[in-house]
Image 1 (cartoon, helix red, strand yellow):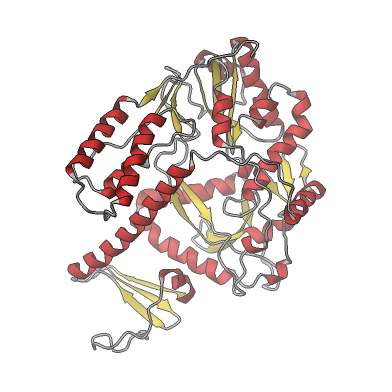
Image 2 (tube, helix red, strand yellow):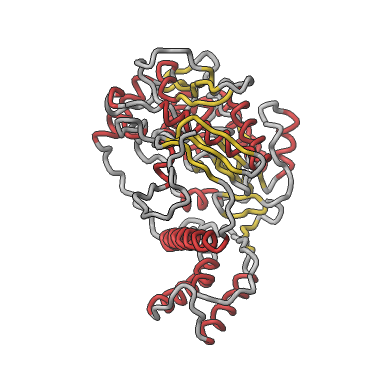
Length: 491
């Protein structure tokens, strides 16, 4: 075994530091694991590298602390940025489409199809030639071996990862790729796990990286149109959602994956993974793929097209899917329960006609959902018809009390510093301004901290601690909001 460093035990100057983002570029296929001493040998372009536990806790602690501190600070700054921006009034101007957006729209209109079941079939909206793509298979192979080596360290994640990709294949959302010459134009997507503990349906998703660079420095996302922004404003949807007494919410199951990609484009959505015999095998993703820059636009534009094609047959479903939709969440309302029942049924049939099943239902009229659940096979078995709180566009809504809730993390006994204050305040997501009086006081306190040039970990002054502690109690007492509708007659 040829080691990359032949003088391992001899102290010498460091020639070069390689960042983690370049790790995949230097790794080769060779891999050996030694169970006796927990060491691992990994082949690289420089030779073999030995890694494993060493008795150097002090060094490890310093390195770990530095990295975590930097990451946490940046995440906190991003959180605070969103906290301040949520009150900005969105730009309502109907700006003309750019030349690129017009080209993307025209390509959509000219190429979209529907299969015999009504499901939509799309072509990827390329903006430049695919000839600019270089080799991407080598990086995808290395990423697959690395993921395969890491997964056994967490049995639960390993099981969910395997099940996710197995389901992908069982649903025909990916198929084995044919053995083609290397000269055939294709792009291979590296993939990794993303875990979302708060999710009701799926804790783990596999993320496909369409931004990974090929050997020419060009990625798949670099040559795809992004498309026009079609997403409704969150605050507008919430206001629309609360116009009437009776409301419901649902979402489209696997919205991206319910839209097929034309077989001519499958080769640009290839991945590498292991089959049932543990052989590394090329697969092709056959649906719109999360991770491609065009996926959000393709999905929302397809929903728009569904309204154009089928909306006349289901007129009461159109407002819910046009004004009451936020990405894959759909909301509807009415002052009449009988009317609401029909409004609920029509989106089911409309979405079904385009191949979009609905799930995760919630309503302040749960008996209506139970009626539909018994009468309609189009409701998924995972629909929740209980009185548990459910998130409506990031705000927790309790159907049983018809109230919005703000769930704050428990207070800690740590010293009250600038870092602690910003972390707690930035939790508040309030696009409709229900708790504006409390938020204004919090913002004033933040401004005082900035003007006082207080460092992140500094202990605050006694009057600032008293001020913040009082705000804490106020937020605890105002965790439930009961919005009421005030109609204006002849106004």
